[in-house]
Length: 315
Image 1 (cartoon, rainbow, N blue to C red):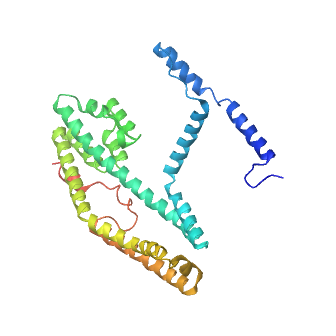
Image 2 (cartoon, rainbow, N blue to C red; image 1 turned 45 degrees about the horizontal axis):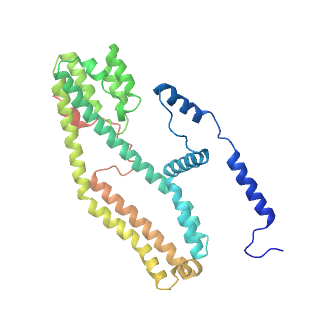
Image 3 (tube, rainbow, N blue to C red; image 1 turned 90 degrees about the vertical axis):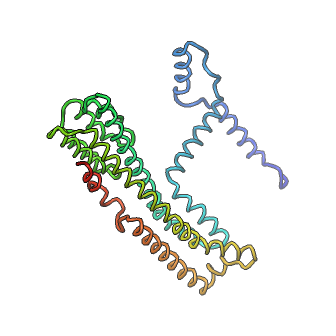
């Protein structure tokens, strides 16, 4: 009979066998040896010292786990809800965390779309400046446009480069790329290209005007966003006040989670407070979006239309 702190012989033997199997199991796949061979024969020198395969295996799995967690950050609601559920001895926080996962996923997707839209807008402005500079340096329009890398404009830019290189319909290819959010300025570039080809107008000056119009719109939007930063931070602070109150109550020994999750009055207060909190956050977000000039419905619904100011300042 073993003591309380002694591991049973069967468990000790199983742990030793698993450890030996882990140390003796060879690394899977020839990728590691192939990489070392390429480094050895391509450079003509000695290959770098090989990392022990257990460490490489653990590092690879850790990297995959980090990438998976980065792509699914909304799942962090589950451990938070599970911790609150354990603290309050109730399943309601875990159910609320499960319900919050799709909402957080939608919010993160909106932030990613906004970042991509801003990068495409910056790429269009840089495109106009680069092509205008090449044209003033003496290059032909097709060569200048075909030499611009795709970057944040996406794989659809390959059709524009091919049309410019082989004499295709460049304005139509530009309009096809301009349907993506943030690339609406390419409608102005297409109009400049059409006017320059048909009427012989200066393409470089037109592109510079388009770039100036897009830059002015972006600067105005950034200024408005900085002015609304105070309102956004105030709304976030007010939304976090109930959490701060729960933490203070727990620190004082009042057990607010037990009162909220295990008494009828507490459940009623929790339901009413949650409804008011959600309504306040939605209403504040609506006010801020209206002040910023964003559409109230689907945020990317009307982004595909051409920018009037970009095309209006061509001539």
